[in-house]
Image (cartoon, rainbow, N blue to C red; front, top):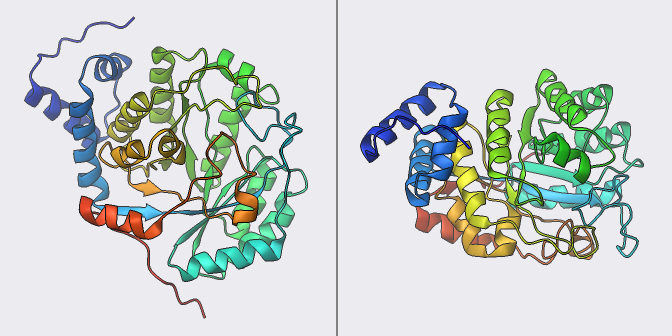
Length: 348
């Protein structure tokens, strides 16, 4: 348990103290984070996070277009639907020309960031992927990669090719839980990779899965404290969704309201970070993905993988059948008073 804080139950006092620390970049203590997570009502927490989001990031929503180019993975993570032991999954690898053609279509639609995501596929090594990165950079857009743990030299090759950002969720900072869930790697290696990426001057993304079997609220506070030290540029949190073809099939879903609280706390401790309203929230209920934008989120990452592949990148059930209604989201953002960075780019 945590120590009771000597904070008066005055909303104004509490709000002023939180805003001052957040805006000045003063670190929050474990006790303060515990107080906010356990005792502050959700709506007050969301309102604080939203105020910080508006002050530090404005009303602009960033759209990042995801292309999932391979669902092959050498790893056997207990929670993931594309784990190597899922023999029932139809595997695919997009060809270089396919990826570039899809990227070009998305650029013409006005997306300014292309996200290339895959399992840890040994056939897509850094040298091969770097060629695709170089070609996409010719379109005049940012390139984000999410292809797992690599060696330092491979991260360097991809950075030199022009990759701007790298997403590598830490999943959980609980060492025992991490080692159980991810038997092919270690938490130490994961953290080392994140700091390598920072050293190479990528914009770095981290984040955790919320509601994992065995996870506690105290360990989520540890996640927040870790993020406060790491200072990533992007943080994505999503609920645990059990996949029927994994060892965790029988466990309950993560609580989306808890996800929103962790999103809000992340905005408070990292006021300048880009924070997505994740697809997994929308799978549980589309309302939660919208609510995330009132709890500190400022990014949406639509899965725009070609339809013939999309359903096979099922890291959790329901993901591959999600349809992204661009016009619908633009109207939703308009009603929220938000703008987006979507605009056609002429790269000729």
